[in-house]
Structures are given as C-alpha cells and as structure tokens.
Length: 338
Image 1: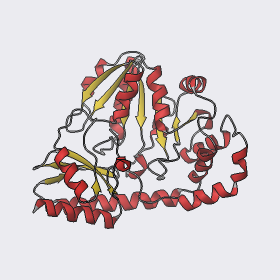
Image 2: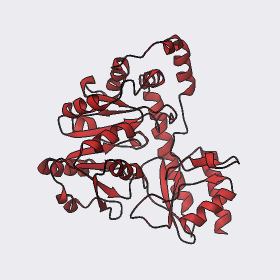
Image 3: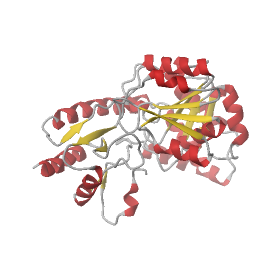
Image 4: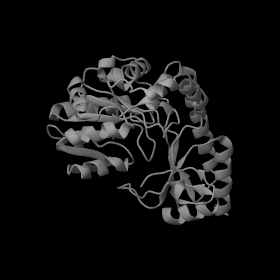
C-alpha cells in the first residue's frame, strides 16, 4: 500500500515509487550528530524544547503551538483518535483510512471531481468531525488554492469540525500563501515533516502547528521520548535551510515543466498536471498492474494505485527524480510506446 517496497526485490531498482527529494543534507546531519554524539548516552529532554524551538523558528510561529511526532503519521493518528468521524476526499493517502479503521471511526469519503473540491458536499460535516485535506494532494500532486483552503475552514467552523492540512509536500510547490499565517488563530492542524523535503524518511520526524486545546490533548496521549536524539539533531537542519529549499523549489519547477513537454510526444501515456515532486500518468494501453510488471523488468519501481479509492487502474504515480533518471524513465516509456 506504500511506495519504496524495493526491499521485496533482489535486484537493484530505480525507485520512482517514493517521493523523496533528490537533494539531501546528509553530510551536514552527519556532522551535527558526530559533534553531539556524546549526548546519545544521556536521556534527551522529555519536552524536546530545543527541537521545538528550531521548528518554531523554521515555521516563523510561536513555539507554544508546536508539537513533534515520530513521523507526521503519529500526529495524524492522534487527530483521528480525537475525532468523532473522519472525512476525506478520494483519492488520498491510504494511512487516513487505516488509522480510522484502527480506532473504529466512521470514515466518510467524498469523491474529488477532476481532483477538485465540491464544497457543497462538505455540508455533511458535524461537530467534532475531522476533515483531512492533503495539500498538495497525494497521488495527483494538486496544490489547493488559498481561496479553497479559506472556504473549507469556513465550512468546518460553521459545523464545529476541525480541519487538518497534511502538507508533507508543500515545500516542493510554488505556493503563494503560508497556511500557518492564514489560520494562526483558527481550529486548524497543519502537519509537516522532514521525510520528503529533507530526504530523511529513515529519521521519522514530523511536526505540526496546532491550536492549544489539541496540543494539550496530544501531550497527554503521547509516549515519553517518542522523538529522541536523532530527531532532535535533525531539527537543527531547519536553521539556515533557505538556500536548500530555494534550490529544491527551482529544480522541481523546472523538471515538472520539462517532463510535461516530453510527455506531449506520447500517445499511450498522459502526464496529469502536478504542483509537487510526483505526478500521475494516465495509461491508455495498459492497466496499473501490467505497467508495474513491465517497468519492473526494466529496473524501475513505480507506484500502482493499490490502496487508493476513486481512481481507476489506468493510472500510476511516478516520483520526479534526478534529470538523468527521469530521462532514463522516458527512454523506457518510449520503448513501450513503440
């Protein structure tokens, strides 16, 4: 149900299934860890104050509104646990459904129409519901407009529901708004992570800007030291990351545009517009299972739509990787086309 399942295969594969930044800060992180390694023999601060301060500085917000998690999914998990019902738009990230199932929460699905929100359907919201919007959405990569976010929050407020924005991929987009500033005093949970943007899926470090009542709830339920030495060290990377983020945005904007032009030459593969570091291709000749097997033979791992709802089997998701790897993918697609 997830990408990056290359552990299932013996041969070396180029992983287009997981959407991780092609840039990383590994050397800097290693240097930070090496410098502080003596601290590994000491319990970390149970309140993770330094890490919270680093996140607050990065997000330009008050530290009293910051919570940390063992990956962003820990935060989303607690938000789902607190809700009466969970409302999602399909297709979206499979883990929302899974966590709702674990806690036996009623899950209400609303179908995206052309990957856009039909706001009339949000009138089903009730008090204490949790509306989850992935921004940009996974699997299609569409960034929500500022006006859409404001409208969604207005409807949530009217019905006594909470809005959760999962912004794991926001730094890959050319967004012209800051969700935290937009909803500073509202009942909105804004979740981010270092997994995708900073290419650190192995570190498991998520964080969120939350209203005070949710912070109190989260702190009460959270395990002590759910984030430890490695996560606290990784948080130090957030300082002075402007150049890294600028380089990331520039590369992915250019590569999205370049790939869009390359796909115009195909008859059997249509690239769906994306604002993120991944995109869908619509398959005109094969289904997703057939395409998965064909690409596997060519040494490429792609993401099927297994686990996603309200999307046909004629789509697959692809990460945007290095230019050289993207060109290799295009070359293999041309072989299939011909």
